[in-house]
Length: 387
Ligand code: MN
Image (cartoon, rainbow, N blue to C red; front, side):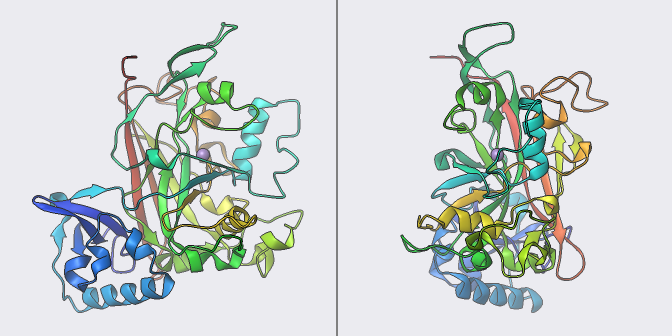
């Protein structure tokens, strides 16, 4: 079943010739049409949102129901090859964090070589920013090289044109199903009460645009042109065997960000990532090395009373491990464009037109095998003519 067996059953939205988009579950190289198989109205929809809004009790009920259909061989499987896959959910708000210590410190050393790699707030809260929900796209959608204002090497003033330092960021995304009420907060241990599942995510980044525009308010147009997510959403319930302790947290987080049992509790996820550029694997970032947990991201996001909405998406930030071949961005892999991104890739550094980036994710299954999470693919198209 190549990672998409009965222990996985990720959700997506698909269409077939002559029939509208609807919700399905992937099994092997096929799709179960959930509207047809379960008769539930929430699945006769072009997004997962109506189902997500029903909350964890219904998510569990449906997973049991689909598992039983699969076990009893009582279903019709549509070949994946005949289906078109769509963005699986309507994104409400999109937030991107900066949770990997190895990434944050690595970038700090590149940009501020004479200072402490981490800024003073970094170990006290998961740093994040609000991204652009409307430009989150499904895996397979081409990414047009963004134009923007940047200062070219040797210039002392900015100019406007195609980004010359286009990058990828390998991340894990979390999809909120059950909302929270305005004015209330969500505890770190309450992740599964609100989050339905996980997607692969590439936070495409134009580094030249970003480095010129970000002071003092943070990422803006260098990020908002496109963010790609996998077409399959792996439910948290399929990841029961993938939880693992955090690498450690010092100083201890403030009480509202602390898990019961501390960082030693299994509140992080052991998901392995593979970054392929132009057909070559250039890096293998391990999500298990990430400093802040998914529950802590959620708790911080709501710690001011901001309400969660069905379809909210929050992402981990670039996943980087401690080793040079475990970094989740070309910024780190090429030391800000000063060395080639791979031994066999010639002198290539940043992404070039026509190149395809594929992010692949895998995690331990409850049956002892490996789950293959939905992949995240995108091809870079040349910048459009300025009109
Ligand atoms: Mn990012």
